[in-house]
Image (cartoon, rainbow, N blue to C red):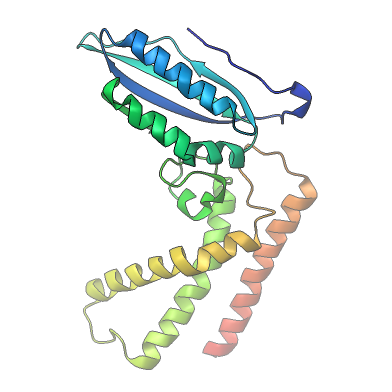
Length: 232
């Protein structure tokens, strides 16, 4: 069963939707109550900018006393979808639904690096809207390379962990490096490359793609030259 709701004029829509999918586990006998609850949730979503449609799929009877329902909601941009996912109104509807369904979960498919590129997605319910993996790799290397070099120089100059067993020093180094990347380096990298680190499904001109790639490779090359001079 699919329940189509209000759509925006197609001339205002982009070529691709930004969507989220939810799975609900509903006790048998609560189907009608769940559909009524979902109808109220969908009506609330319609009031948010960028809403396109909401779909409630045919339920799956699991033959163990529960029924699984799946819903998909579509907005025209990641920012508009994110605003709905983070809204207090949505949170209130889900709190009210606790008496109707046993559990729910958000479906997400990621490459593992989206946390550093999450300006396009929600915080607790990632939408898998990160840039292509190859761009993620280049951006992470751009942040990781100088962090490792500078960290090594500082630790060597201060004599930090120089006499530690290698496995112990490595795990502490990794913890420090990961913290620096997550809270200091990668937020700045993503802001610098925001024009290039767009979601994988978003079309981008060859010129912009090439410009971003050349910029990253150029910065990496420049860092290599500078660090070689420092270490020589």
